[in-house]
Length: 572
Image (cartoon, rainbow, N blue to C red; front, side, top):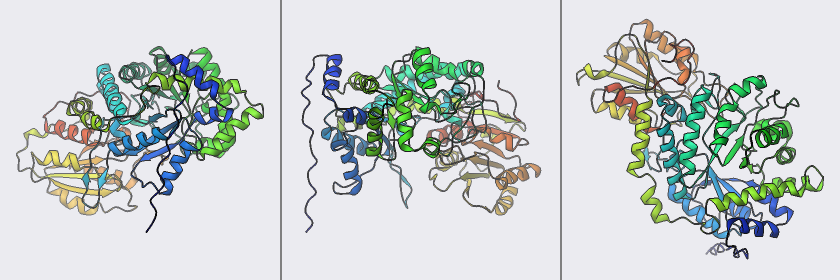
């Protein structure tokens, strides 16, 4: 019989029983060694999955806390209660309270969902999931942006998150951008600034710290920083009038944190160093010129943009010297802590430089209440997370974002058709996107029971479109939905030629396909002859349902393009 795993260790209470936040910061800082300070600056990533107490994964994570003494964590995907329970366990082990961040860009549901149970395809549910930022940009509504921030903060805090690594303040003025795209509010600096500031207020007025990213701007690049180093070759004047506008607005709105850009801007630093590693960018510009006093958090330090050129150790030291307070998601936790310590001993920066970051990190922990309360109530989490009132906010954002770009044959809405109409609904998506088309088709089938769904995998090199032409000949309406979008693993969001040819052939045959862009909103530039084009901004269930209701005429398509799509009509 296997012995039971050893019980988790519990941290000794800190002697710093201060009566004020500032006194607590002073007391804790005075107790720290150089390595303690370096460890507080390193925040590794973990997942909200269930792992047993004797598993290698759990031992690795608990080692970060009990042996390396990291200061914070970035929580990735997982089911809501497993995230909360795991974070409670880790908080019990930590001498200092852990501060936890997450990419809650589209609500807490962007990270805290149970996923799908296979092979049944059962949606296990989770926190509220909003459409992407560009959908909010299409509404141009600051109240919706505020409400998204509010709901995100309330649900995130209930699960143990303290910092939301959003909003994205990048101005997406490059249609070829493979990694930002709909994650941005749009291409207009003033609109991004206005909605970003509203989102920040919604987050921070409800107990969480917001993070503007990716400073000084990741919008005008065709290179994915997860895979290579982007270079933005524009003048300082252009940066001042476009890229920096939302960040200046965020600083004025009191944003608590800024995340850096793993990309080079020669106008700011002629050495070619990416923003994350540039003293000119993080200290001279952000701290001294823009007067930002909050946390500076690096983008993930395991991304190829910094690793391939600078190496893990050198990049960590350069980031600290540049002015970063937090080294997020390193490849090797112990190596990164040692590198920060070695930077002090080699004279690359002083211990006083680490003290500056310590004060900001400890002050952030105190600000979110971690000095006195580090655990979450699992029973309360169920009452808050996924609440129907929160879901109504997300549904409103999705419905108001649906944008009719073109309808030359006046096919929309579909309410004029009888219930027996033959609808062909073609879903084009990657196999891993298990929810693609499911909610959309189900919503339409309520009105048109004869709807025929067809699925085409974007992962097939030679998909079989020929059998669809025969079906299309007998259909009354053809809907073609594209779910292929930006991601951290792609170099382009352009659709393959075979898919483009399929839509063009339908158009030539006078089949009048209605194209719905759930992924890349710029897809129209590849199919300029398409007669009907609707942008739904995201493939999440809330956007699928909103698009279906809009096509049926149950809601009006009131969204307005916050971007310019080449070969399309200009923005209203």
